[in-house]
Image 1 (cartoon, rainbow, N blue to C red):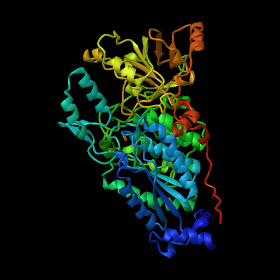
Image 2: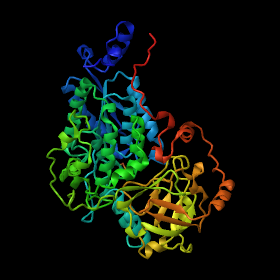
Image 3: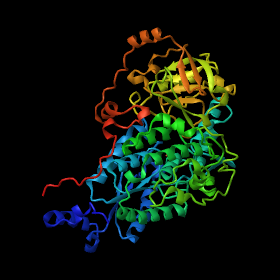
Length: 571
Ligand code: FES
C-alpha cells in the first residue's frame, strides 16, 4: 500500500488532527474508521436541474456499500451537474469549470481515490479531465441510459426523433399536438439519452479507455445491474488505491487510440473528438485532430443505433454492449492497455459474446464499411481543421459545390429558414458562423442547421451545412462542424460572403472557399472582431482562455497533469 494522502489529515497529531477528525466525527463516524484506511471520494454530479443525472445520488449509495465492504472510508460529494437540456447558452460553456472544480476538490480534500458518477454529455469528459489532472486513482461509473422511448407503438430515441419530428411539423406532416404528445414518450425513466448521442458515446469511450468497468457503459439507469456496477466500482477503487493505479497509468496514447477507433465502430458522436482531445491534453498525450481520420480508416461501423442506425441503448446492452464491439475489432486495438480492473484490455475482451447481430454487426457484414466515422477536413476555409461525421451524412453530398448563404447568428438563421421567399436552392450551402468556442461563447450544438421550410415541404431532408459550432451527437446530416480557427478570432469563415462558391470533397478531405486570395486579403483587412458583450465573471475567463476546437476547447492554463500534492495547512 503506498502512503495515503488522507493520513496528512486524519492521521495528524495535535490540534490539526483533532480539527480534521472532530468535525468529521460529527457526521456519526466511529473512532476506528480513522485508522489509516483508504479514503474514497464519490464525486456525484447529480442535480434536479440535470435530469439525466438526477438518480446519481441513489447510485452513490451502491458505490458507498462497495467501498465499505472493501475496507475503505467513503465520502460522497456533489460536483457541478451540467444538464444539457436546461443550461443556457450551452452546457459546454461550463465543461471546463466542472473539470476545474473536480480537480481542485480532489486536491483540497483528504482523498486517496475517487469514483466519478457522471451521465449527461459534459459531465463525463469534465470528470475525466479533472481527475486526470489531479491523477488520483479514479474509476468512472456512468449513470446509464433511459429505457427505450416508444410513441404510438413505434420506438423513438432521444434527440434523433425530436429533430425528425420537428422537421415533420415544419413540413406539415405532423401536428403540433402530436409533437407535444410525444414528449413524455421519448423520456421515460432516469438516465441519459437512449441513442448513440454524446452521453452514450462518452460512456462507451470511458470504457474503451479503460476507466470504466467492462460491460457497464450500456446498462440502463434503472437496471439493477447499474447498481451492481456501482457496488463493484466501490470495491475496486479501494484496491486501486492499494495498487497505486492512477489515470497516468491508464490514459496512455494506446488507450486514446483504442477510444478513437472504438468511436468509429460504435458510430459515436462528433463531440467525442473535442472531449478526447481535451482529455488527452490533460493526460499529456499528443493526440491530434488528424489522428481521428488516420486511425479511423480501417475501422467499420458495427453498432446499429440511432442516429446512424435503427436501435437504442437497451438493445445495445442486451446484444452484449461495448465488449462485444471491441472484441469484434480486437485486432485493431492495443490489447495490452491496462484498465481499472488491473487487467489488460485483451484479457477483458477474451470471449466477449454478441447475442444479437442485428444490433452489433459482424466484421464480415458491418453496418457501414471501414472509414465511415468522423473525417477531418482541411483547406482554405478551415486551415486548422473541421470534422464531418460520414455515417450521419448523405452520400450524394460528399462531393459537392454550392453557393453559400451566410448567417452570423442562430436567430438570423432561424428566421431566414422559415421565410418562403429567400430562394435557397437544395444545392446551396448554409453557413453559420460566430458560434465557436469564443464566439457564442461556448460552442453550442447548433451546427445541425434547420433547412429552409419551403425545401422541407418539398421533401428535402439534407443539405451541406458548415459552421464553427458543434452538433448534438443525436443529430444527422451532411454537416461540417468545428471549423477552426472560428470566425470570432478571425478564421477564414469570417470572410465568406453570401453567393461565394464552396467546394466540399470528402475523398480529398478538403473544404475550399473558391474565392481568389487577393479578394480574401481585401476582406480580411476590412474585417473586425464582433464587439464583446459587456460581462466580466466566468464568461470573461472563458473567452480569454478557451482553446480552439482542434485543441479540445480546454482552457490553456488547465492543459496537463498537476497531480495532487498535499496542500499546506496553517496550524
Ligand atoms: Fe443529457 Fe442527452 S440530454 S444525455
